[in-house]
Length: 232
Image 1 (cartoon, rainbow, N blue to C red):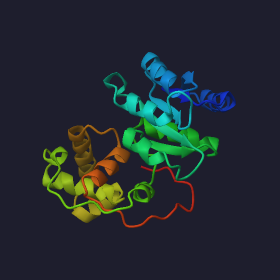
Image 2: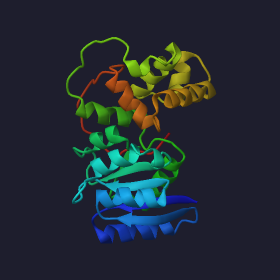
Image 3: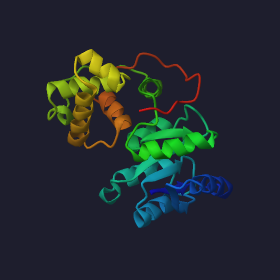
């Protein structure tokens, strides 16, 4: 059973989400909160698998709540999905940097919501890699200066850095395998090792690390033409 915490300051939306989620035999709403401060308390009390987090809320907003939850060792098993009204909400990139696993539009079909919860619980990304990369590029407007290998990457092998760079470039596991001449299974093993060494939760966070380490540079600042698809 996947345990879900709902965080939104609109009671009607929480009620609607709860009805959709509780109708699934493998999903269960274990709590609700109407602001970020309460979300942190409810998360610590219920230990949810997935948290659906609104951004704009009173007292403590979704960004700060996400940062607190994702930085809490007691909640290492909880993943945050940001709910947004806009494809490129100005807060989405900050939420990803704070530790969120992805974002979902509030007007997404119920089937997309359910699939997003299940995939997030399995540790998959809510974004097609290319879409996630374009999202990051929208918020990174200036090239970063050249520098040596960041301290955080010094524990990675050369091949692991290659894999991380390709993930940051929006490549899928199949594309990484083809590009490096290795099996998809080996790619997945490398990704598991990289996540463990960097202390990241999922693929979305690896993209952020790749950008922060200047392994990938922004190429454009275009808007998305359609809502993000959900794939590994």
